[in-house]
Length: 217
Image (cartoon, rainbow, N blue to C red):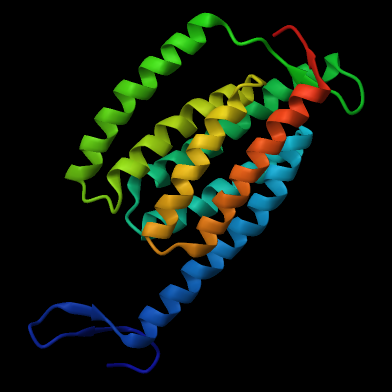
């Protein structure tokens, strides 16, 4: 075994990670989780206040969370965070257009069409059932929590980009499931972040409801 944590040849001829390398990997993962927690806290504050800078932090947080979940083999949440990165670009464009229709301190809101509610409900049911089965086949650590939270979050992120007030309700459920997911996989920094997201989603709903102004798409 090498002192610096390099890869060594085991007795059976296979390659293995040394103890030092394992410790270094653990420290690296924890550092990513702490970074995601810090940027995630800033993200949720900007989200509640509906500041465009939120989407820039969303890109950084999404990349960090994707790496953390990937190392833990939680594939749906890894893919979800890559989706967040892409949606952050879409959301930034949408919010910059809508922000010109409201005054200082006001929240721009769009009415959610009935057809959006219908297709979102269909996507939630079909998407969750399908994704859970796929995740079971790929050895996901927590397929039910991971799959359901991921589909909810996909829908919630799209609703957020469109400034639908009801997006907060989706996030409350998704964040509770994600908190349980992270606890079950030992990602305690990430669990703390999602618990904070849950509380912020409750506050965000009432804040947007109180300060919102309906605008045209």
